[in-house]
Amino acid sequence: MHALCSLHARSRKSSYKLPPGPSLLTIIRNSRQLYKKPQQTMAKLAKFYGPIMRFTIGQSTTIVISSTIAAQEILQTDDALFSDRTNPDITTSYNHNHYSLVFLPVSPLWQELRKICHGNLFSVKTLDASQDLRCRKLQELLSDIRQSSLKGEVVDIGRAAFMACINFLSYTFVSQDFVPSVGNGEYKHVVGTLLKATGTPNLVDYFPFLRMFDPQGIRRHTTNYIDKLFDVLDPIIDDRLKKRQEKNNVTSHDMLDILLDISQKSSENIHRKQIKHLFLDLLVAGTDTKAYGLERTMTELMHSPEAMRKLKKELAEVIGVGKAVEESDVARLPYLQAVIKESLRMHPPAPLLLPRRAKTDVKVCGLTVPKGAQVLKRVGHREEPRGVG
Image (cartoon, rainbow, N blue to C red; front, side, top):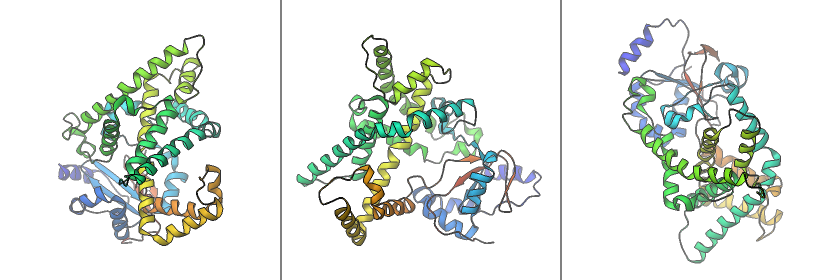
């Protein structure tokens, strides 16, 4: 199948210079490393092939950017030419690609959702209002870790942080905890499976004619798990709508109330389905990424006693021994900021930025990114790879 697709691609007129890249055999040989350690493997390939690499598998062409200069051309100079999103087959589960802020094309709906998120959900006023909630959830996390420590139990930092993030998001969105509705273990399994599915290579993305067969069952399984999450969210929305009709109702002022207000006042685009899919976007983006970042940071500190000593010294001198760090204190803790930034550089929660798609043939640093190609920007790299050129 790959050979047929390659012959078809070569039959097209191509007088332009395409970026270099590994052969299919090289990709297959490194497939396990690309899946398990994408950041390190991409870095090694970039050192050989250069800052702009081309991966061709089946009918899919992917351009991977590892250069700051090339990234500026794509994300700033020629942003309009790369503003389209690639929709992996998994995003068609529950028609998520028709409602998702992440995967919608630039359109009036996308602009309205973006405006709502920036102006209401993630505004300074909203974030300041939720500071007490963040502090409370953090204290609950620390209390659980402390209790486990007193009992001599092993603490899984990643799992503890994962549940804390879910609790915070659910309270921020609907002012209640989702976990009791589904069960601690099952909820983590559902969300964890969704996140794993998003990172699983899907044959359909490389050979679109396989879409009707869904050979790996990724779309089918993802639809089932999204259905479970929506089964929890639907009764909550129903209950909120019922309470809003009561005379003595007290508004919760959470994200759900904000979206329902917008929906009932003016917007025809923001409806029940849109609200549920927006929450799905926030859930996937805001749980495992934060938990992974915290887990990796703690691991690096445990492996670097000197860095741990310096960090403890800074906290003791600036905050005081035994005192809690407030959000307003972070600006006075430069070493803590450096530790977090270095950890994110070494272990980015997502090694690649969200995929973009070239609207037409575009020249980037003297090389041509072909029309329809998926463009990915590497995250966390420091050096500028030179490659074969």
